[in-house]
Amino acid sequence: MILHLFYKEWLKTRWAAFFVSLVGLAIVVYIFLDVDNNVRMKGSFNYLMSVFYGIPQANYYNSLIKYVPLLIGICIGLSQYVPEVLDKRIKLTLHLPLRNTIALYTMLCYGFLLLILSYGVVFGTFFYLNNSYFPFEESWAVLTSMMPWLLGGIAAYFMIAMIAMEPNLFYQFIYALVAYYLVKQFYIGVEHADTRHIIPALAIMAFVPCTALLYTSYRFMKGER
Image (cartoon, rainbow, N blue to C red; front, side, top):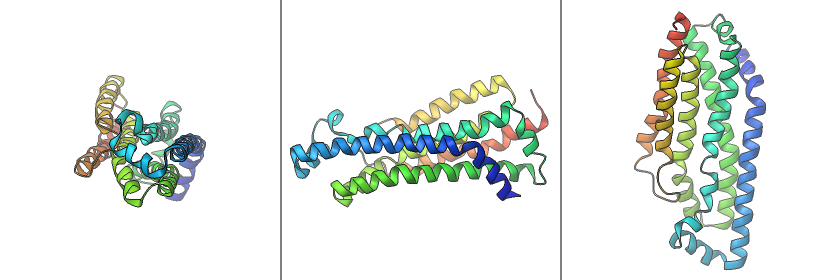
């Protein structure tokens, strides 16, 4: 039954995941066409030094990809949950021969795995191309500095799931405000920085809405307004 539920979710989200991953890959290709041009003009060593010690706004070549994780999380979340709620299909899902909590978290697990897969395609390509131009240490530092953005996309996905399951419009509005200010925290700061010390706290913040889904789904199943 869980595999059947995964397949149902796949039918809803496959095109959204495909196109948003394609957009992410296009941005990655554009970034490294620009990097390649700069390396040819300045030399790899000089360009690397300008990335680390030059004018920040001019040299954070990875800044273009900053909001791609957020875009991926939003697109997958909307394509997965909005049709369920608008067409009232979620009620059919909750009448499957599965416990409601298991059915809901199966959907959530599917979306999370699809999100991670899309991240793997886009940022795996970014890391591979970055490693072609720069030392591994620089590539790893850049990838680490992106972790808050990746967690921001995960938080956005979980918040969309939580908001979609809330039956009351006023509470949906309140949750949307909370989601805005929560996700905003993941995108504060510079593009090229050591973020290792804050990643654990951000990870906890990203996964809190995952547990809050229990409350909104309970209200939905009770038919509260």
